[in-house]
Image (cartoon, rainbow, N blue to C red):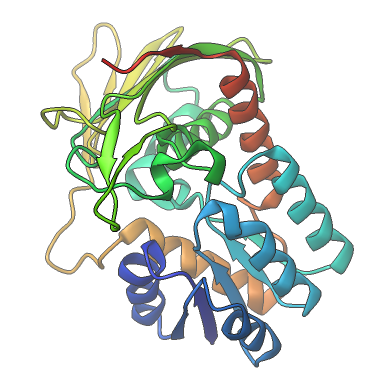
Length: 319
């Protein structure tokens, strides 16, 4: 199969090698070259994969849809829910297959968590907690990720994945939310050599409540001075599950020894294994013509939660 990958960031260093490991022909298309994007959409590709910045998602997805192409779009799926709905509605009207890049649903450890939850191994899911403190953006220069008007911010970059995980693991939608956002690095140097004010959050602490009654807390920072283990914790009426660094799942129940499931990558594990697994599901969907999840409906649901959070979060002034 053939895929045109629009965008040279994540599309280049993660998606392209994963597609190629699956045996695809994967061609990169510069996101700023409108003619090249149009030519790709008019070409003989089986899939257009949009991995441009979020402020370009709508333009690129609509071009693919108008050409009748199946399309995969990265999160956060546009700048806001209005963008997301426009893309979703266009794809459905055109009758094309559409996929949303929430690839962590296909990580082996996350799948184990979902298996345990569905098996009622911890009883009814009561609360979820997510913790991620990293230094990924601390030394990074200024770019669209630091500009709120361009769809930047750590809420969209990481929070979108967590919100989708909450929806998936709880089997319910987010009904209420709130929190606080922070900009820990207030100014950054751009490629032009000038210093720029950062208007998009690089850290956030939020709470969610689903319509099924599950409560959620999320604490995430991308400009920390240190990197700490990433943790997802699920509390139920009859036990708990903890996932550490996307690899080790532990099931804890009163009166029983902890059950540990280790999915740490081995020497034969492909690079970006969750992406590799996800592409396998996309490939099968293209062969059968069956619409699968996560898709643009999931992108819209997540975008609506992020819009609500942006409207309700208290903004902590930069120090």
